[in-house]
Amino acid sequence: MTSAPEQHHEGWRRLIDAAELTRFTTEALRAAGARHDDAVVTAEVLVAADLGGVDSHGVARLRRYVEGLHGGDINRNAVPEIISDKGSVCVLDAHNGLGQPALRTAVDLAVDRASRIGTSAVMVRRSNHMGIAGWFAERAARAGMLAMVSTNAVPQVAPMGTNEPMFGTNPFCYAVPTARGTLCFDGATSTVSRGKLEQLDRLGKPMPTGWALGPDGRPTTDIPETVQGLIHRKGYALLPLGGGDKDHGGHKGSALALFIELLCGPLAGAQWSRHTYQGGEGGLGHFVFCIGLDALGDPEVIRAGVDRLAQEVRDGTPADPQDRVRLPGDRRGALTAARQAHGIPVLESVVADLDDIAAFVGIAPVRALTYET
Image (cartoon, rainbow, N blue to C red; front, side, top):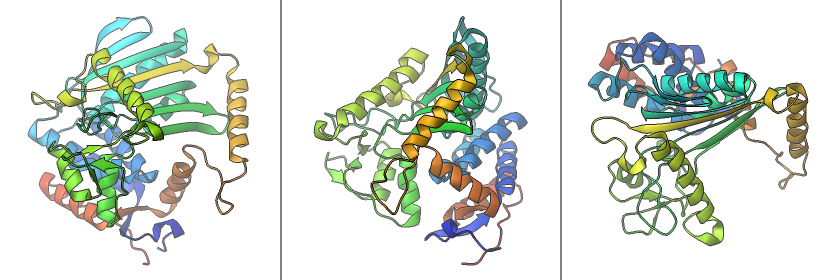
């Protein structure tokens, strides 16, 4: 088949059908020990990231789940459990299971409570990496909710005023229903995520100055050293949104990261980033907050208002006449449609990693589509 224009991109080597990639990912997780339903939702979240162009959080992350399940670092038999229930507020213990099933349980619980009493907050403790927050927030938005979702992570970000990594990249995500779908923002509270750096490295692209610091506290642009330094906690650090100084708003990004750390760490009864993955389990925390549109007024009137506001922004005069004004999720939606139709472009190095995973768990390798280069 002939690839779509967006797929003629330096570094892409294979096109894989979304259904085939989902099948392979589900089978790999099942072969590693995950229960069927847990494997299905985890695969769906990973492939949704690749469909939307968030390749740093897609199947390139599959190995960590497979090895964690196979080696016992992730509890393959975990069932999320409500350990505190006070009206509109609940706390779940994920029992060191996969993050995706735990957070989906939290979202569905928050939606159920908010649909009955107007609003709900659910926190999760003792969890693992959960993929893209947008998948979960949009799940709630499709059920008629204004939703917020966040998580903490391993320490990678230096708060303003220090060179020491103390916070995770701590994404902040919201989604709201519109008359034509959902409006969703999902972004880290750091200048960049480690996964994005890994993706740039696979593509052979450089890192701009001002994204990361070396162990000497000076800016670095060496991606491989930075990634390995972050993984092995050797003093490398990413910078918060706005960078490392107040003049460019670094104090604001640092404060937002701290807020997520509070919600998903001590307030959730989870480990905060500096103490995650200690004692043989992830210890991550997640946060979900929902407000039912029907608690705010007529849902259809609200959806129409959101649509009008969104369209006013899109109709604004573009700063670049060659480009158009886009809202959060616009690019991801366009990429999802294109990749569902033409296949998902996957780097050759990622395909090779998937082949290694297939051999490791004893399943057939993923089948790629042919295309013109």
